[in-house]
Image (cartoon, rainbow, N blue to C red; front, side):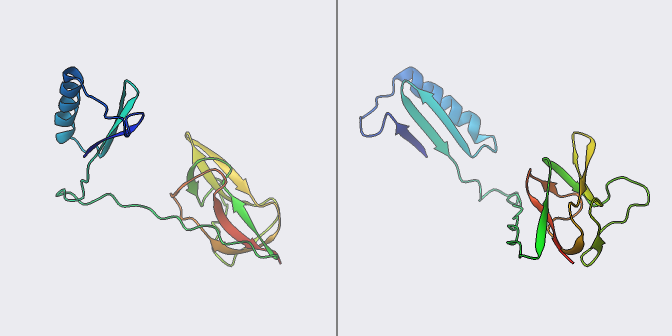
Length: 154
């Protein structure tokens, strides 16, 4: 499907032969690719090509669904990711315990790490408590500020 948007809407935008040839060539190139959407702006008009590739022989890519962090109760707090990266339950230190739900946490204790650009950014608990819920798994990509675990105060 090729559509015109923006300045071309409702104005009967005329496509000259050169532009039509270029758009046709783009469509031929897209035919052998896995591109689903392409936008082209020309002379104040924006052309959008959208394709539905769901009929392809290959299965559709899986989509990871992230559950939102539960609202913290008055007796608990959420520990969040300090940077974008990959969450690691083991922060790389020898003898550091890997936390599970129900484990006690001391103020200042390392509760995990986020690996970013080959460096481990250790995450410390600011308060003491008990791990109520692990919200991410080891090796899962995380965003800045994403909730990692919920700790219930003692």
